[in-house]
Amino acid sequence: MAKKKRKQSRRERKEARALKQASAPQQKEIAEVKPVEKPVARREKTQRKARKQPNAIERFIRETRGELKKVTWPTKQEAWQLTIVVTVVTVFMAFFLGFFDWLFTRLFALILG
Image (cartoon, rainbow, N blue to C red):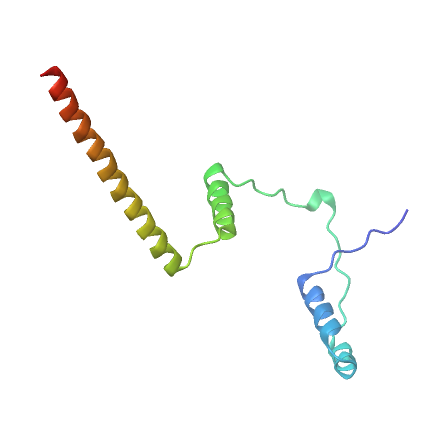
């Protein structure tokens, strides 16, 4: 059976990135300073603690925060510009519908008498 490759820890990935970005003399220094890690003993499956399932409210809040981090929020200037556009269109539509309401009210008053 082939051995399973051990997943690197965050620190190991960070050190590998620093080593990759460093120049040759710096790589030697980094390699010399790097501490030797002892292999981590894995727990038996029977000793593992069962993970607690979060309740629905906690899960909802966590997922909502995750989705809100993905949102591209407008800048302050864009928000003001969009607010002005919405206000102008709303005022225009109010006058437009108000004019036709007034016109049809007068027209029906003339017809019905």
